[in-house]
Image 1 (cartoon, rainbow, N blue to C red):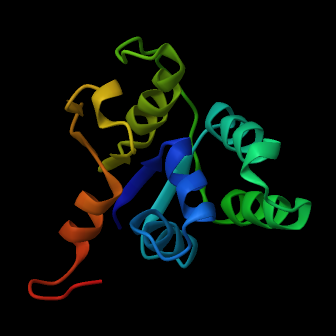
Image 2 (image 1 turned 90 degrees about the vertical axis):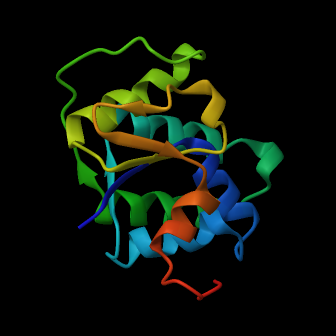
Image 3 (image 1 turned 120 degrees about the vertical axis):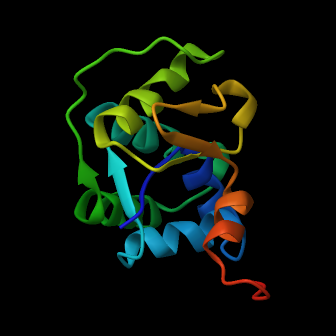
Length: 139
């Protein structure tokens, strides 16, 4: 199974644009087609950001989203601290990807990350969605 790590902006985008590429990937992760990998730090970031009032998500939507992530995610223990992103707050996602031996780190801010990290490709949601789609099939 393909292991992925979502940057927080992918989760936010999935909640704000339920038909967009991020939402399509999020649904695949929740239904088990993709293995979402996370750590305590990554989960805490998800929780903090999607709870921000400016995103206008109800407490029920926030709680349901977090519970789904908690229940379906593969929890990973970080063994190495990494300092490789242009935004140091993003290093937790690389740490998770490294610890999980993830295939992809999916982010809306590709420029904040190195092009790849120990075998993990760093891609935008649309790029991964296109890679997962059969040739000639448009999702």
